[in-house]
Image (cartoon, rainbow, N blue to C red; front, side):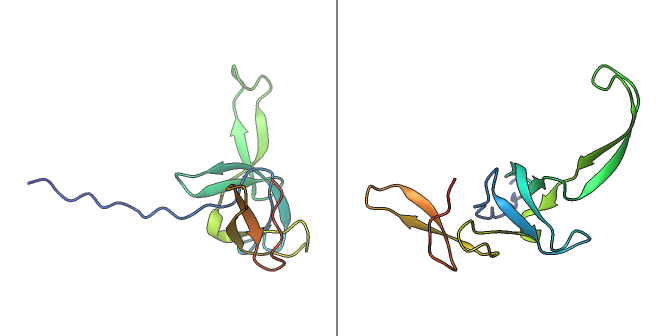
Length: 116
């Protein structure tokens, strides 16, 4: 008999690259930025100019100069909320099926489709 494998329930991630998000908690609370990358397995995302960290790099093949490099660190998806393009407010996202059968994300506040 083998040990039971415990599986983590995956959250529905409805935030995509190039979406505008606002940070809800942490030292960057209240700042708005654009999503650069989404990691679905780790449920994290990288937001432009948010959560900047400094890394000390030695000169090598990738970094010719070396020194202190500033880059964005990932945030957990639960710490951000998407900002609607139409009503310009932080909102939750719903899904709607159109007449042609395609799925589209909608803003829960103004009920308008989110543009991709």
